[in-house]
Amino acid sequence: MSEAVDVRGGTLWTLIWWGLKNSQKLISNLILTRLLSPEMFGIAAIGNTLITGISMFSDFGVQQNIVRSRRSDPEFYQTAWTVQVLRGLALTLIIVLLAQPLAALYGIESLAIFLFIVAASNVAVGVTNVEYLRDLRHATLHRIAMLDNVAALVGLTSMVLWAWFSPSYVALAVGALVSTTTFALGSMLVYSRRNCSFRLETDAVAELVGFGKWVLISTVLAFATSQMDRLALGKLIPMQLLGLYSIAWIWASLPNQILEQWAGKVFFPLASQRNRSSSDGGMITTARRLYVAVACVSTVVVYAVSDVLVATLYTETYREVSVLMRQLAIVFLLYTIEQSYSHMLIAEGRPRDKVGGQALSVALFAIGLLPAFDAAGLEGVVALLAATSVLRIFWMAYQLFGLRAVELAFDVVVVGTYFALAHAMHAAVGAHANRWYQAAIALAVGVSALLVAVAAYRRLRRLCEAS
Image (cartoon, rainbow, N blue to C red; front, side, top):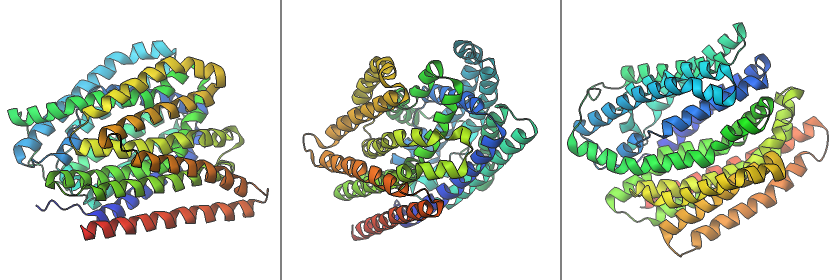
């Protein structure tokens, strides 16, 4: 099979994939906020964060390894599938054993039930057919995109129906379980099952573990700085406010989500292919800059339209979400910059070079959490998250480029542009109370961001074709 990465098709299908899936997610979120109370979203936020954290403690980077590895033989894939199955079973057992103690820690009895239900989804994740990763390796995403969207639709439908007939946090857990199970079953139907057999080839295990141990350490540290805020806030703020915070997190992260999808499914395979073929890395650096520039403009849009968005879509109970969205926006712009460097390091087979910066940022977060919260509440915690991300950005940029500060200088300009534009656009949208005026300005801001994204994509295509 050709090692070429389909930049055009991968980008198109990433947009379709993200657009369909998040449209479903946001529509279901709007329905669920009218069926469930904010406290239930708070329980789900803690439960999902705990499960994500436990999962990261066993993440050996099977997906990243398959995408970047020079091997693509059946023995390697079968070994990867075996490791994945064993991990899924182990995770399920660990979460079941920890469910009651964690519920007691937070003083929320219902949290244990949520964890029991979602724990079963790890079995489904474990048996998922690894053959779909061949498509991901080459950014041929149409089958994965359609399969994932169908699974999401089935899961979200089950979530809404459960909440309609029995309004409780259980609906949020059932949706996750149904979605992952549907994807696992679908992967067995859509892709060949020839590699879904148990095998532990020595060389394949050595490669998976050798690369994966650093992915594991890096992933655990990434969890500590990017998601521990919700675990800590679960002990510091009322559950209702945590629910609002989790909804704001969803909206503020939208640009980061789509760009991270593109980075994981197009930029990372492209960087990995360039590394395998020892091609010029200048094109990857330029692609990174285009990626960051689009992140800046799209984050400005989220900041600018936050008030109009929340006022239009939510009831008065959720009005504070808009304020939290604006506070979180800069965090996700920094996360996107950080992820661009992270993908470049992993594509080069250097996940260990992320660990030092992540460890320092974990220490900063642990030391600064309570002082930041005491000084400025939620806003202080968000500022601390931003500071830890800046630390990791500087660390990874140094690992990639040494003392050459060109890339960091570009990032500083991008962040400065964000601060200048975000406040100006937000003021422009809210300059008049007339809803039609606000909608028109918000639409103009969104179209401008789309045009920037299209221009960046066309520039990247020309670079790929020229090289």
